Image: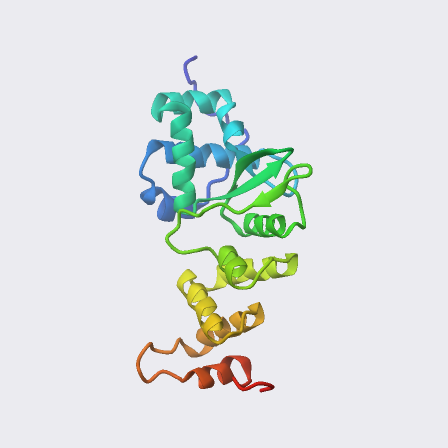
Length: 233
C-alpha cells in the first residue's frame, strides 16, 4: 500500500447524512458495522438509475473494501455481521430476492426513496433484477414492520397501498402503527382505510387511555368507522 498523500481539492465524494453521526454512529457496536454502512453507502451512490441497492458480494469483491474488513473486522464474516447489525438498528434495510433459482439479500439506505422501492418490489410492480421476485426477510427488530403487519392482518400489498404504508411509517410512531392494526382487528375491520382513520384520529385528538373507562367496542366502532357492529350498520 502506497503512502497516502492527502485528499485532492476536487474529487468525488460519498454523502453521509448528518443524522448518521447523532442517531446511528453512537448505536453501532462493532467496527464491521461502521465499515458495512460506509461501503454500502459508497457503492449505492455510485450506481446509476432509480433503484440503488447493494449485495454482500458487491461489497466483498471491491478490493479496498476487502482490505478494510480483513484489517479491522474479521474479513467476510465481519462484513456479514456488520450488515446484520446495520439492519437491526435500521441504518440499512434488507430485502430478499430470488432470480434464476438463486436467492440473495440486498441492502438499501433507510430513506423514503428506498422504502418506496422496497414496497414496489414486494408488490410485484418492479423487479430489482431480471425476472426476480422479492421475498420478505425475518426482521431482527423487536417490533414487526408495517409491511409485515399489513400482510399478516390484511393481505397482499398493492403498489398504491405500498406508497401509503411508506407515508404512514414516516408520519406515525411504530408503536401507534402496531396498536392501530390491533385495534382494527379487534373491530373486525381489516382494511387499511380504517387503520389510517385510527392513526389520523390519534394524531388529531390524542390516543385513548387504556383504562377501565375507555370507550366501549361499539363506541370505538362508531368513532373510527362511522358504523355499528350490528349487521347492516
